Length: 329
Image (tube, rainbow, N blue to C red; front, side):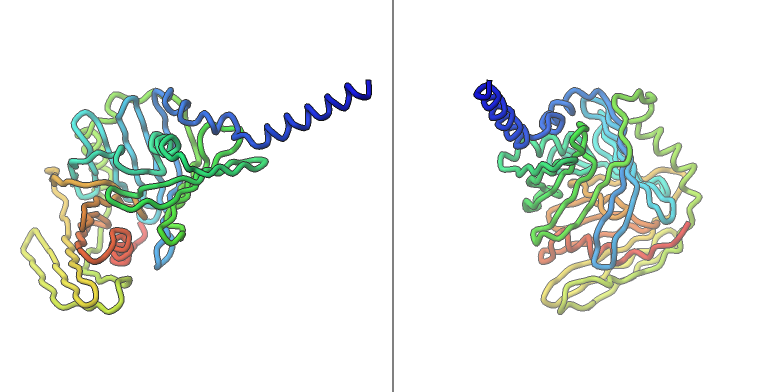
């Protein structure tokens, strides 16, 4: 009998040790779970770390299988809103407060990694054969490769799960120096909700939101970066002004060369649309459109364009953030 008990104890010990080394079943089956979702609504807080401080925005994602997306980015200071929309017509970035949209020739959301989209996280989970899984008593962290935007170099992200849930609770993204750049914390998740038929309709969305957000008043003025590369200086500034347009073109030179363009957008009843190539990167409380050597974004009624062959894309976003003078609603 003692021999049998000893064998049983050894068996139990081996089983427990083996179990402790396994990834929790719900975490392990995350890609399978995501692939079976017909729709979801996800709400989270995005924290973007800048040299000038941390910015917070609220992100709400609506997804309808197979590839309809609506991502709303809410400014927590002045109540402004921007929207990424993907439907059968294409990929759009909407800025309702100034009645302007961008239609993108883009592979979004396939081409890069996005912490607010479950499909993107699932793709990274499957593709990274060298991911590192760390299991704790209550949560599991998966460290894997991430590509913040198209043509960016690979860096790392940490996706944190509660062991008893199929969806993550937090995503952390780091730059190539292991500095935390973005933190996305999921606060609510709805599985397979039913959406109104116009949820992914671009025209309906712009019309309804313009009526609400066009009431925001902006105090537009030319601003200059407070964060920029060392050993550079402003060498030329051209200001173009007429009744309907103010555009400022600033040229910086030195060890690094770059150009900053600021254009004040005066909203009209007729929506304007620009057509661009590029990827999408949500940082701070705005949607950035990324190309090989330039970025475009709209904030507080001003459209910003930064271009450089010397400055990295992430550094351009940091410079862009330092241009924004935030005002309360």
